[in-house]
Amino acid sequence: MPSAAPAQLLDRYPLIRAHSLEEASARVGAVFSPHRLELQPQAHRGQMATASRLAVAHNQIRLRDTSLNVLHYGADVLIDPGERGDFYMVQLPLSGRAQLYSGNQEAQASPEVLSVLQPQARSRMWWSEDCTMLLLQVPRSVVQARAQQWGLGQQPRFALAHTRSQPRVGAWCQAALDMTGNLDRFGSQWLAHPAAAAALEEFLLSAFTILLHEPEGDGAVHSQQRLLAPRNDQRCLERAKDYIHAHLDRALTTADIAAHACVAPRTLEAVFKRQQLPSPLAYARQCRLEAVHHILQQAQRQGQSLHISSVALAHGFVHLGRFASQYRQQFGCTPTQTLRAGS
Image 1 (cartoon, rainbow, N blue to C red):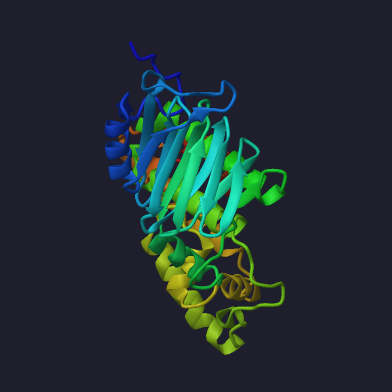
Image 2 (cartoon, rainbow, N blue to C red):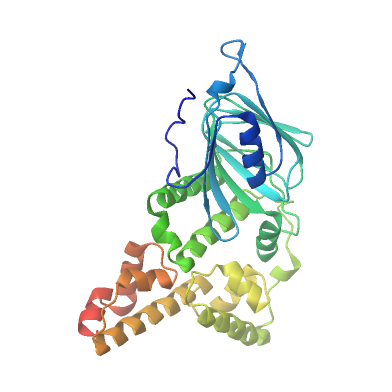
């Protein structure tokens, strides 16, 4: 009788359970890339793993453009996809270790070292028996769009291996782990509010693109990052404000706003500063808070009953404690006081 796979993150979202090489290869390959899957000799025992040890558990939660996956094989395996699909794959071992070969590069992954597999790169991987991976799958087109918005070039570069001792890598790893744990426990609540789920994904994508990107050189400045002449500030500002007010249902990023204002993020921030306004994100947050405030006032006047948390989530506020603090700072009262007294 095959042994059951140990409890893992995202077990509330099971996708695949398999105990044969053929089934595991076919089903996992359909999700990621078709691949050859082989049992490998167990280095610590000097013997071949048996098929009965294989206990594949693949959990997945899908957002809009990306997916978070937790995958465990339960045996020493060789995974050989050859040329991978057109997506980036961030691999963060939660336990165990893996040996990775991608193109002419080689790396070892562990809970202290994550890896980034490039789209359509020839790859081969060995996972240890106790290896459990947190996998972020992101289409190439999505990463390219974010990279262009941030002035990182059309073909962003990511090293195969990244150590968590680097602050920027450690920051991304902790954010990914926290987000996965949150979704594991409260995924149904997040997914019930598309704006909130989109905000989570946008944060994860922006952090991945910015923190793990390998810059070409310290002196490179993208042409779009040159400051606008002051006479053009007003036109840029109007485009930015129009976009913000048309999207009060989501937590926008500076890159989102800048793209629709037809400038680079650094340029947009400079324009707002020259106009003596708060940063683009702070301005957008003020507008979203005003929208929530208006809805609560209207509900109070009409004697309607509503859930403040639902209104906040519908406007992209994913951290309700922070939302309440920001609301009080802006309006001098709590959301509950507004709903009860029409403050």
